Image 1 (spheres, rainbow, N blue to C red):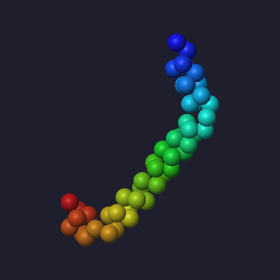
Image 2 (cartoon, rainbow, N blue to C red; image 1 turned 135 degrees about the horizontal axis):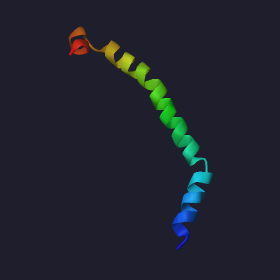
Image 3 (cartoon, rainbow, N blue to C red; image 1 turned 60 degrees about the vertical axis):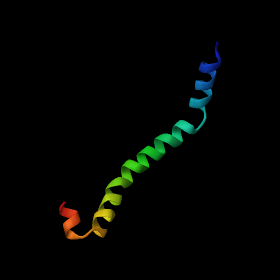
Length: 49
């Protein structure tokens, strides 16, 4: 019954974890700009609501 452990080991040793971390950090970093752009396209009434 060592299959799950070896699968986890392979999962962590591959670059998948690194890519996930980079994507999460990128999303966190970009979110303020996305919200700023989104609110800039709204009208004043939408922005204050």
